[in-house]
Amino acid sequence: MIGLNNIYKEYKLVYLDTNVISNICKKGDLSNKFIIKYPIDKKYLICFSTYTLYEIAKNKTLYKDFKKFYSAYPCLLVISYFPLGVKEMDYIAGNTPLVNPILLSPQGITFEGKSLNPNSLELLLNKPEIKASFKNIHNYTTKYYNEVISVLDKPEFKHINKDNIKNKKGDFVRTFMRYEIKHRFLNGKNVEIDKKKLKKMKSLDVLAHAIFYKFFSDKQRKKEQSDIIDILIMTTTPYVDTFISENNAIDILKKIKKQTTAINNTNLQTLATLNN
Image: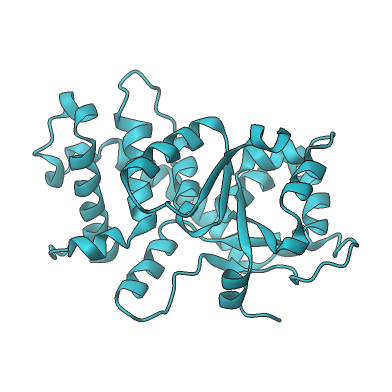
């Protein structure tokens, strides 16, 4: 089978979030429009993260509908932050030639106009590593949500005025990225981070911006734990050719695209574009 690095180099990855997958799988011609717009013979591959797979598995109706689509269109499972950040750190250290977001390719990449294994989704969900990832998502989401909503109370953020946080986006993003590297990657050690290297932490760059927009740019906006999964899904954006999501996520990513080079090479699309 073709290696994962070669898959990443040769194919264009189209990321679909849970909402987009749900709409594509509903009755109608949206799935046909998607296949026409992103044909397999042009080397497009669907990809999604374990967070999206986790949400699909919890919804019996969506799972049933997606199972059919998944068995016919080659898909890839990709990683998001934090594991993606680990790969970026390895890349910065020179330990790997590229940051490849692909976790695994459950199916072969060849497509011959016929259905693949109709039980391929079940086979994927029964893999030990997928079951373990679901357990981690369930436990980690609540923990990380509680950390994020109280992050301004951390010593690293004491210089930021909470009452004026909406006007301190740049300061928040820089501080949050360094906070994450210190506590997530360096076991709490205070290590000065080179600015050029920090910019190569693309998933972390997206994470910091998205957390600002979701949690701190508007005091009136209701904070929800589900926002964390939405944000973590966004962190894969720098490493896919096209990212298709709901309007709110794309609006945030378009703002991020204007302020950082992390997602310069990614096409940002909403579900509506599939109907045009």
